[in-house]
Length: 234
Image 1 (cartoon, rainbow, N blue to C red):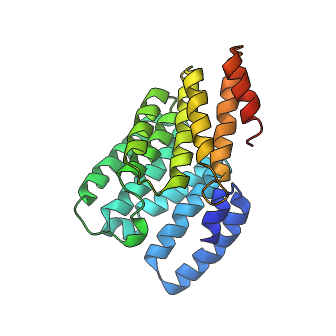
Image 2 (tube, rainbow, N blue to C red):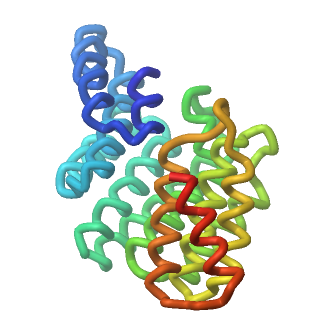
């Protein structure tokens, strides 16, 4: 839990310290589900530190774990994490293959009983993680499509995730040159944030959106105003 908070705060080094302890304890307890969860978060910390080869290795451990062999939903998440890391390693063919395996395993999991701790990995989350892969592959229109599906399906009480995925939608729109739309979407994302529902990951994503929009060199007054406003968010 402490590592998850650190990941949300974009503090991967602090998260890694907690996870190293958790991995030792999970190993001593021979708790396969706990070890899987630790490896999942280790993969996220590697991604935040731009250590994508390390992230890919962590995803390999996840998808070959006993838990993944037993539960197709866990297998799907492992393949999806692997697809994300491979996309960032500039291996598109391998990444798409991994995402296809994630889709197939996710389909097998429907109607089966999975552990409560992986309930977050619903269809909305599957689409959100797919959007990250498409973004890394430079397919921003596909990423936008997935994010629209996510936002239409995500439960209303998941405000933190809604703000994060709305920020990623803004980024996808900006990268397609839809500058005014990206500004409106980014403002909507920031409006969802509060001390209890926001995270550094969201504001970091909005900062990347601002950088993309600034790089267009647009002089439209409403866009210039948005850039000035957004510069105070991060």
